[in-house]
Image 1 (tube, rainbow, N blue to C red):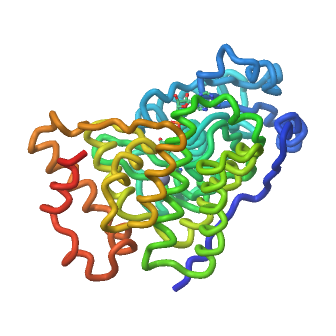
Image 2: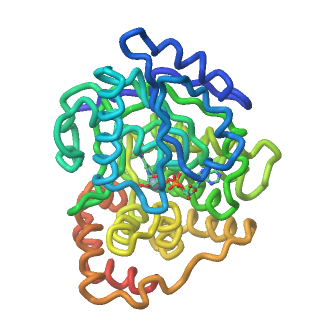
Length: 359
Ligand code: NAD
Ligand code: ZN
């Protein structure tokens, strides 16, 4: 069976296109449902972007903190906040949710839009196609590029038991607003690590056994854009990085990621290491799986003057390492994509453990 997958309905791209957000949202507002909920990374509280948010009197502005990657408990709390605000406005649902920020904020916006129409805690929906009701209209405005969260059919959440996305067709954004000017202010290291998430998506997709012409077409273009951005430093690198993220996301939509992602999830779950940096830390040790990609990644580190954190597992107990191995091994499709159907004969606990211990 081939996957018949859903993509973003509408997208707008260009420097300054954020100014059209008001017009775009006005099409969604109605008399019964005038409210738009803006879910915005609190890093912008004191930034000029704040004044540019097209906020109306009936709207709701939710500042979100993403010092930690999104948790199911945070999603539930935000959803309750929106429900309460809607009740005060005597409105059943908002006209839409707009996420403004990086991958974490976009994921929070996706999750809240889903949980407003699906009963119970978000924990219940971590998995594949467990959502039964369409979400509230939701739009994304990325301010960091690389995760591909703007195009994907998942919202990655850490719950009490697992770090796993709410994967569904309803998760996909209805609208994305891709304005390269908005990523210009991101801190250099953060921009690099989130950009490397995209680079690693491309390598893992292109080197994987699930590869097909669809994924290859998007993956090769995204890879070439990453090379321009991180090795050549072209002048319009923000525009290119934004499109690399989008295409990288499209590439893995129809294939899968691989070893770096499988192991990075273990680091995230047990040690709270963030996605982009975790992928980079792991990828640095994967020359046996991705020799060309890792060699080029090391060139990018030098070119960008980035020093990777070392020794992050130095103080980890054996129990912690075992839990990391468990989390990583749960991600079977990732291993199968990377190493083929008989991956269990190639990758065992001992090898994963040894790799974690080197980091
Ligand atoms: P992020 O959203 O976690 O943000 C990282 C940091 O950058 C935060 O401190 C944030 O406040 C700051 N920041 C964001 N934009 C900024 C800007 N323009 N200027 C200054 N600071 C800015 O980072 P990310 O790497 O984009 O996202 C990682 C998250 O995305 C993880 O939670 C991961 O699980 C998730 N993810 C989701 C998908 C998906 O398909 N849904 C895919 C990959 C990763
Ligand atoms: Zn990723």
